[in-house]
Length: 375
Ligand SMILES: [Zn+2]
Ligand SMILES: [Zn+2]
Image (cartoon, rainbow, N blue to C red; front, side):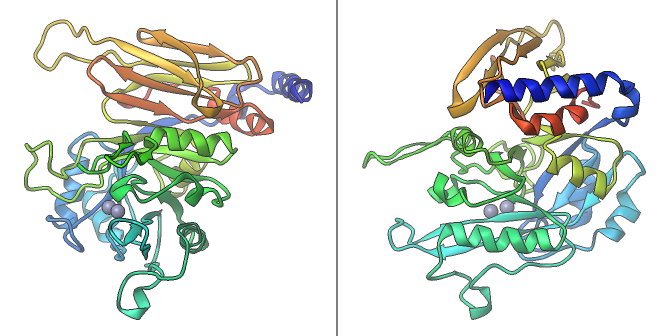
């Protein structure tokens, strides 16, 4: 098995050496965006104009409006706030799937899914009966149906806040085939990203551990960090559902809906709630990254410390590197390799896995050129 992989890589290396690097990869840029945003059209407390303006004025290049069961017309928003190559609004929706589950303390569970780039509303199962809660269906089957409907409409699915109300278990996501986004970091104050155990001894994985379970099964789940912002009136309150807490930075050839969706579908981005990368590259030999030196907001030297952990199948820590630069050379038996960066104040960034199988051949071409992110 391992030898076959090495042979395939060797074949790729021979082929790629015959093609000039600039012909293989278009010039890519980094675009920072938020994929989970609510407005006054549903339960957010500010108009789409105010929300979009906030993101445009705070260092973002795109925002996806994802109101519950409401797809905003982004054309007038882009006319007002869009700027070619600099800012873009994408349409979307949060499909607010709820289903009855008498075994859960709430009597129900939440299986919310965002559709990124969705042109029209997809109603959750059960909403046509006026009760807005599905009965007699499994979590897994709701994901299959809703993700199928979103893809059919040309949208990219994002599984939201798995630990909100302790709703999602690893097996609920096992049947999702094809690439999808997973909210490993949702900024809602009760998103429970870190997991935990209750007084009865019932334990839920952290969302990052849940992600490793999916990756170890070979599923193409890409980690997203997002705001799930609802509150634009209490921007100085960190506990409010305010914007600007977590984001992704997408590596794409241009700032268009098609280019962003294609890059996200291919896992060409990293997730962050405060750490910015200077470079990221992966090729057939390994992964290398450098972290942007932060600026001390109070002036003077910034002495934050950074730890990068390279993580493989089953969440195994393969290596740990201190400092602003980190690299890892593949051995070939890791299953996949991803980087999780944490700083000495608890901020984090996550890069997407590189699978050490035949998928490496299709992914390294696009990942091989280091460039400088816009932030
Ligand atoms: Zn939700
Ligand atoms: Zn939401």
